[in-house]
Image (cartoon, rainbow, N blue to C red; front, top):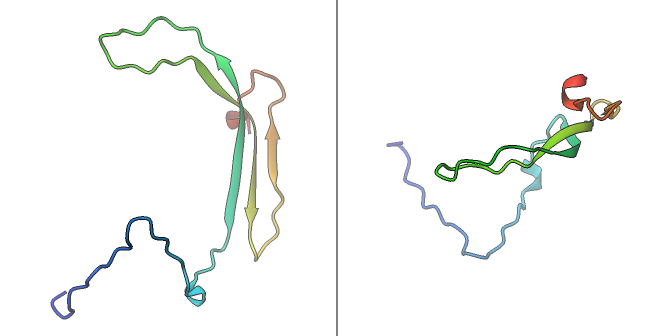
Length: 96
């Protein structure tokens, strides 16, 4: 650090937009993963929380019933992977 002058960092003004202009300096990533879960919401019947303590009122549970993921690459071909629960009680995140 002693060999270099200190940098003067200039931030854009509030509300200003910035753009990336030097596209030749981009680094290509080898792949991208797109993923999505689908869930059903099951009601939860619980006791009343203690008003003397901090709490979160839990009233629904997300049950994953299906998912899909896709790997996108310019170097290889991939097929989307999907899974759908076979019945309402199956957790798709744990079954595959």
